[in-house]
Image (cartoon, rainbow, N blue to C red):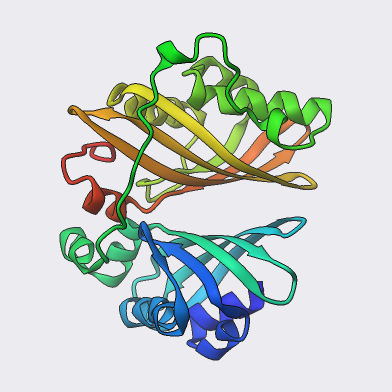
Length: 282
């Protein structure tokens, strides 16, 4: 699968990926679900039209059962700017049944010399979104999902991932010093370079202070040795309107600490869906 993705998006070998897709395959990208040969092919063609030929300079793959999380870091051949393209695949080993994909769209705009506003207008209009009106007062006694309740984890890993999740789900910023190595390399949405744990503290705090009734929703967790992938959402009220940010996070662990983190979300697609939002400004 990784070879097909690499050859398709870096070299333009469209048939390499087409051979892995079913007519019923759902590809969700830019907050739009795509089906059918023409729509699926257009995803690749639009990428190539925007990005051109590129080099894959780094990759990461996390597999568990039929689920695969993969990140490809593409480097523009002219500007040398890197773009993370993160995929969450459901596959039977032969074909891909579904894909959720996130592109670091601000990096894509920078790499290709486009204004972010121009690239945002080029993105498709988002599908209709219905977000449940979550109210903490309705869940005083109920236990919400945490990594250890939806994935079979050993005790040490359960403790680590539950603590990581508490940073977002319970605003437990003190857990950052507990779960991250002092020299951890962290790549966050909207940041052109890697940051450290102090920067992560500021990033989380800035996102959460913009929201009232914030709610972090966990969807899936994959574990592959010392690597973990997490699909999740951050919901909340901003300026009187409900917003939702889908996230894909990939963690690399060593000696019971997070050594590397990559979290990807499609910021420009988010801003097109929620133009009133200042979630990723400043």
